[in-house]
Amino acid sequence: MSFDYKRVFKFEHNVGDKEKNMRLVAGSALLLISLFTAKIILLLVGLILVATGYIGWCPAYSGFGRNTCVAAITEENIEEDAQQNSN
Image (cartoon, rainbow, N blue to C red; front, side, top):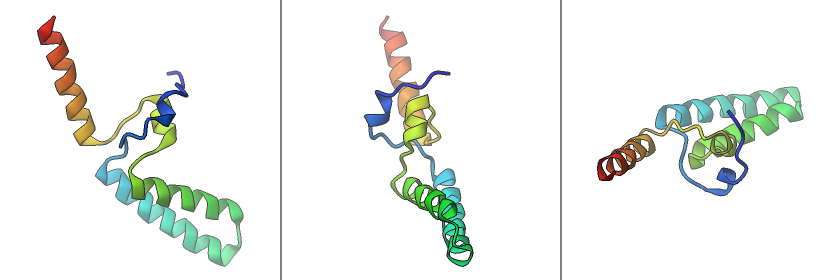
């Protein structure tokens, strides 16, 4: 698996609903913990998780071509089937 930096700038949804919820919960927990422990790294990771969970787009997923969004996966499958049928 290679990292494609050009895909990073395509802001397509690539985080599914289940993962969005997990990111929001985990990020909120890390933000809360960082308030009591004063750890900057926990604050940054928590902010990243909350942000990617909220907007539904992860730049690392884009770069590696990973997608957990069910709607996007079905659209890709439909497009691939249409291309195969036209050939």
